[in-house]
Length: 188
Image (cartoon, rainbow, N blue to C red; front, top):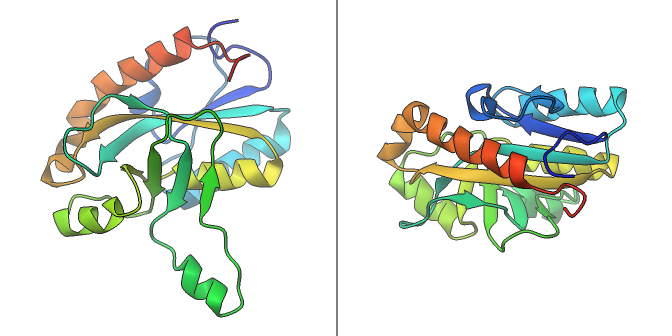
């Protein structure tokens, strides 16, 4: 069956603008921007629902020039937490999640809207794309043992062009809606 209308499939997005072209009949959750809002909203929904799969759709900044289009990351990392340092102090912390069936790209998540080239270059040492919710969704899905897929469309280069993000959302939302409509969720 094509499209996300299957029972047990939840589509999550940070903003209504990113989800404006989600096919009708989709079980959709809008969480708000940032890791805390994303984790809280998804946790509340998973507690009250019977879900087997969560699909996060949204936008991302490219951490390397020339990247554009739609990505299905294979790994999600948190770029703004000191996991190595905390683990060394005796507080083990997971800060990355593998996603089966991805395209090999790596998504870095943090609560900072990345528009500074210096910050961008630091994150680019570990990842291809950057967003503000993906790792939170991955953590919650891992905690609930729910399958997770993340789908991101590049809207900017995580530099000064990121400030034009609001004008780039419509095109990205169309691509995300088309991907949802064309995907066979039984095969994901």
